[in-house]
Amino acid sequence: MFEPKCIIFDCDGVLVDSEPLGIKALLDLAKPTGFTMPFSRAMDTFVGWSLKRQFDFIEKSIGNQLPANFEAEYRQYSFQLFEQMVEPMPGAVDFLKNLTVPYCVASNGPLQKMAVTLKKSGLAQYFDSNIFSAYQIGKFKPEPDLFEFAAREMGFPSNNCLVIDDSEAGVQAALAGGFPIVHFGLRKFPISETVPAAESFAALRTLMSKRLFAEP
Image (cartoon, rainbow, N blue to C red):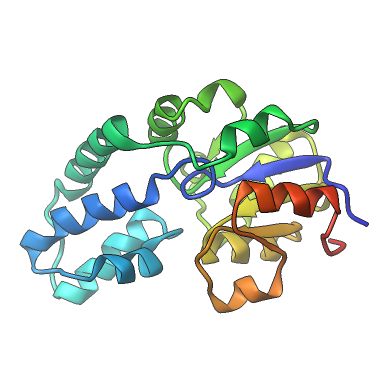
């Protein structure tokens, strides 16, 4: 049975409940450009994507480029929402407190974003410098490079690290890099049906206690 030597957490939607706030910011700012999408569909579509991929999707939909300052406005508005409302995912604090193996966070989001969301949610103290961003290497999920980068920095081979991610892109990235993966959360998509799943940290704790993982 596989026993992880290191755990790599995604940030948004796993550690912090920031995804709805980020999607709200995106839809609010995109509306004046002519882009509209129901919130639930936007969550299903955009969660786990890089910001560039999200912007490209919107530009293709409206048949025009977004304003030059769109990203700067998005960052400012979304960070305001995070500062005001972001919370840790239920059970995240207790789960981190009780871990006995090294762990880190690896996200498609920039370090500045994680600095805000992890601090506001009270989780920053558990990670120290073990926080890794796709922006550091210029490679984003669903490519495996981010998880490979995090594993190297933590000092473990890929097949010794368990990835916890809630997005389709994250599951794809883990599988592409040869990482054991648990799909976290309630959202379902075809590839998530092929890997172990945990809808909550309580379920993840049970999964880990029974070591119900496929061999990498």
